[in-house]
Amino acid sequence: MDRVTDRAPAPSPSPAETPVEAADGDARPLLAPLLSAEGQALLAELRDHDPAGELAVATRLRRDHPAELVSAALAQARLRQRAVAKFGADDAYRMYFTPNGVEQATRGSVAAYRAARLRTLVAPPPPAPSPALDPAVRVTDLCCGIGGDAIELARAGFAVSAVDIDPLTCEIARTNLRTLVPGGPPATVTRADVREHDLSGAEVLFIDPARRGGRGRIFNPEAYSPPLSWAIEAVRRVGTGAVKIAPGIPHELVPDDFEAEWISDGGDVKEAVLWHHRAVVPGTRRATLLTPGTPAAAPLTLTGRGLPDPPVRPVGRFLYEPDGAVIRAHLVAEVAEELAGGLVDATIAYITADAARPTPYATGYEITDELPFSLKRLKALLREREVGVLTVKKRGSAVEPEELRRRMKLKGPHAATVFLTRVAGAPTMLIGHPVERPDRP
View 1 (cartoon, rainbow, N blue to C red):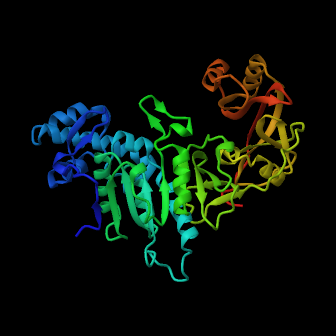
View 2 (view 1 turned 180 degrees about the horizontal axis):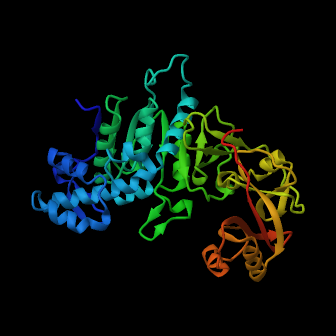
View 3 (view 1 turned 135 degrees about the horizontal axis):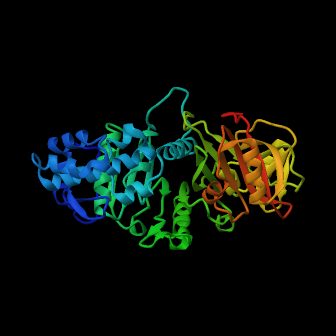
């Protein structure tokens, strides 16, 4: 018997009745044919195909295979290629996707970190490694999508109850769980409106509200589906859980009885998470940095200490650009204290210091020039220094980096970085180059 089951409140379409949505949004042929030997052979053949030559490939394949199956395989192959950036090749080329599923799914490394932290909170690991929680703690994953978070929760040893309202998405989540976590803890996929799903027996709750609608990204948390306020109350009722939210959420919307954590992966801010558990200190703000090759259970985490804003001071020899998660979590003061530095402007998250100090929470640059904003002066300086490669960074400036590079007419063997910003309120250009950034403290 399969360990991943469907407990929909109404009969789900069978695999033979469930269409697989193609990248162009049309209903394409069926998931079941893709899982057949013929479908699997087509997917294997298309793994590394070049989308630019897709018409010729489709014409050739349709000589020997049904046209609808070829279209479905090509659509899935495109989605898998897009998904590699989030899930890695080993997982992406075994998973199934919809266009929205690829777009909205959590990056695998972030989901793995979250699952590892949740396991530490609810069931600290025993002295001897154990692949599963004994007895397995069950996590209810609401708005599970194509199953990316459910997969990592199952890999962390949790039993999983995944819920989504879309029947196709449920079918794909079920298939992905069976494929990537065979023989793992028991898992179910239920098709239901999450707001009507019975949570009376839930032990741990994870909610990833939909933050995209027909017109694109949704910025109002109460327009999420389900709304943020509903998700927060659901976690409170269960007692333990987490809510994934957009990293731009205003801090005043974070409940006092939750911890807020901002997560970046490889330097890019990916999400924020609201945590609720007896082991979590309410009101805490955290910035967590994931780096390639770092175990999910051992990330870099900076915790807020309620420091006042750093002082504004003249530009020193070094400039530091804090990681985006640090900025979003309002922890620039903690990094400035570590660097013995101050801000170049009260409204700009650039830290300046007189000495180079190693920190994983900010990227350092040695500043060679500080000039009032003037494109003419910048062009002359770059020509004099024979700069052919220019990195443009900006905070507090309306200048577009690509337009600036075009106007500079760069030529030469050297590289430089220019910061377009404000220093004590005045538009300023800072020119310099990166200093080595350690991966760990």
